[in-house]
Length: 366
Ligand SMILES: Cc1cc2nc3c(=O)[nH]c(=O)nc-3n(C[C@H](O)[C@H](O)[C@H](O)COP(=O)(O)O)c2cc1C
Image 1 (spheres, rainbow, N blue to C red):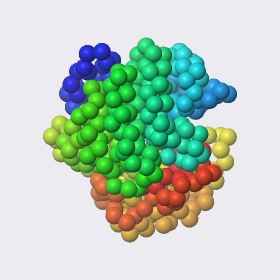
Image 2: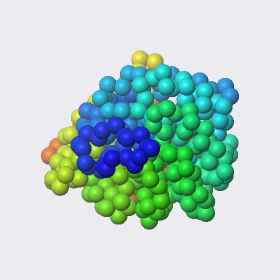
Image 3: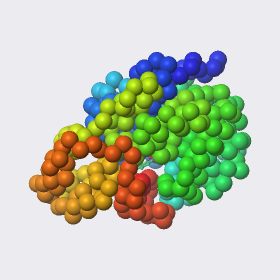
Image 4: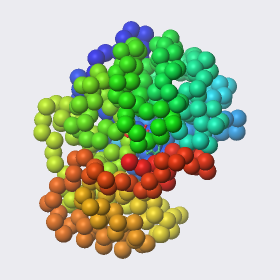
């Protein structure tokens, strides 16, 4: 990535200088300390982002999210993401977070869960560019270091996109991530890479392209198509935690190291150990694993047989019996680089869930 323009804080050095950057997308209930550690085992991204810290009059930074900052042993920088609209409490939270080893503060302007956007935070703010302008100004002043923004391209259309990009420039945002969908489009529509390219052309800071970066080959294509400084990857890193290492290979013009079903088995074992918690009963732990495996299963077999069997297990022994049968019977088989078409990570929920308080593994599919 080129040096930042004058007046902007440079990003922490990427793993390989001169290559497009990679970031693990913030994902509620996913990008915690355990998951970041597992990802780093297979090839860390340049940057991590925490799940969003909720900011309102009663809020205090959530302890488990602070752990992903304070105990981060991946060697890679973590940005702390905030969601909120109350300037006084956003500033207060920034002061709290500055006592922790963060790479910067990121503002969420994209969460599409109705319970969130109805409070005019996250994606809800995209309806009110004046309010965004004020919030960006206040956060810019409150952040002595890096201040970054992650946004969708609009609420129901892109009518305010250009104005918000002007505010990004005006307030010297240091890094902008653009998820190329509107709030209304949730997670499964086509991604508007042309709108990401528009942001790249409009803002002075580096832009990370986000949305359906499904593989290293897709990352190369999307960076070329948008002119972005790098990519942010969410669901496809749950499916394929090797994706960041593979991106570095592809960006460097090298062949991508293939992943086998035996490798996937090792990933699942590690994820199971990393997410174990004596306070969580086995059945609940297995249910949590199923939510990750919903994504992993998209690369195992084209018929979705692994997913079908996995969804029916109830305990650890059964879970690993299914993993052994589907992943170790022919361990040398290649794990697909791209998700198999038609193999959907369920629940296939594109209807906004009014009861969900955010983006959760229960409601977001791929
Ligand atoms: C389970 C889940 C939780 C998410 N939580 C957050 C979040 O806390 N903050 C945020 O900005 N985006 C959140 N997102 C959106 C992702 O960061 C990302 O923008 C989106 O998934 C598109 O990228 P992808 O196609 O690579 O998954 C979440 C997505 C998922 C799947």
